[in-house]
Image (cartoon, rainbow over all chains, first blue to last red; front, side):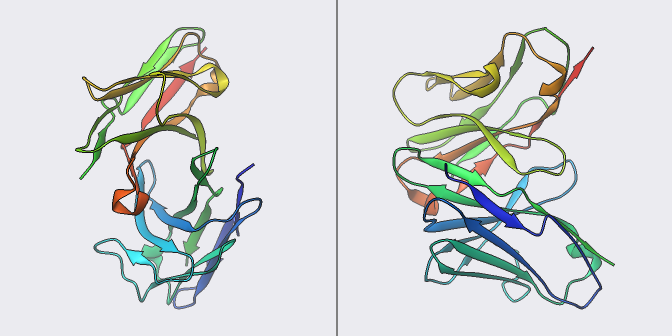
Length: 116
Length: 116
């Protein structure tokens, strides 16, 4: 149980275009979602925390106008990278907090974004 | 604020040898502790977690960890490793009382390489 499905797994886009990444909780309701960025051979860097129905809370240094996060329902959160540039190329991972008996955090499988 | 220190960035071991991956944390409040494994280009998979109760926690794939409050440590151990255990391992901590909006703080990761 407590599975998060993340799509797409890989995306290549042209510089200046926007890309949307989706994360869906398949068998539970995710009131809180986290979005991370991971550079090669590095740890996960938290970009923002989103709570269903409210605006996301961004970490210091993360451009909220570039990385748009929407958490409109209890099973879907999206990250849109707007006007992407090559420096936005990275591995993006979502995570949902699981409450109740199986408390913890479950992660999506990640999205490899390459901007050319 | 909480932080996590993984003392070894890389740990090479031979197959069937025991291994310990070290993790220390700092926090002014009660904590929940987690170990995750990440294979290349994939999301994070939960190995084990400590929320409360017994300080010795057993996880998947033969891993275990011991919560030591006095030493603020949560070291991960496996008595006999396999080639397939080669991966990146992350220790993480969250505020057990719900502070910081339940954010997970990650260590920098330890690359475990199991050699034949």
